[in-house]
Picture 1 (cartoon, rainbow, N blue to C red):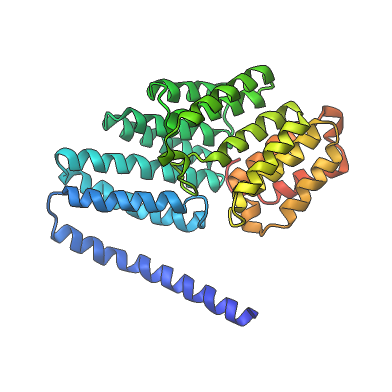
Picture 2: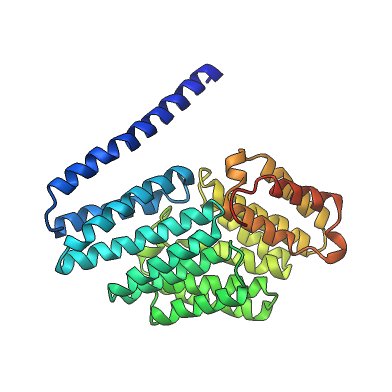
Length: 341
């Protein structure tokens, strides 16, 4: 595609987006004029909305999703006071999911502090449904995404254990996410024996997950095999176990589709990290730089990718942190900062 055609497509997309925003007040005015009690039919529609967003978050543009999620969350908030009985409970459950997806989107944008506020809202909403799996889901995913923010790893261990307790230890997305976050946080703390034990426990819970969870790929509420390989990769990367780490990385990449640049990029940051941890900081940093430079700038600034890269650079021995290759990788990451990390 030539430059003129590309610019034309970009201008059309920008115009369409602006027109969509300009028409929102008209739609809001109509909704206010014909307000009726929200029903189970409304809840059906909103559950489909939340399901669709859970497939888009992590794949589509975070900037666009942030705007769209904000608009839909505001509309749902206006509807809630008119919802009754089961419709109200279902719509509060949707609100918990949308708030969690907003938190994930903000984390992707590097806005960790704002994300924490949305996680609190998501947990409050989930608790109102009296659904322990919903409450565990929000807390478990919050613990996982906290590993990409400036949060104490001990605090993440506590978050993870709360998710497991709230979910009554049942094999579900929230509980398995709690075990995953716990293993990753312990690994980053350098408590390698405990991290391996946590990883073994995670495997046991994973084996008990229903097919509806393990088979849900490319979806924020699923927990497929690739995620287990990802956690295994991180735990062994932090310990400097080259063989097991590399095997887990290869297994994860074999499962992740090419379009999943975020997860594939994170695995490559692990690959750099295990080299750094094993003593070859220069080659690990060069691998990191090559991978980052191969990505478009907007992807290079992704919060999860940067978080994985920084975690790997922290594995360097103190006498290697000033090496030219390590310094170059740090400078490249600093140049792509997009949020409050």
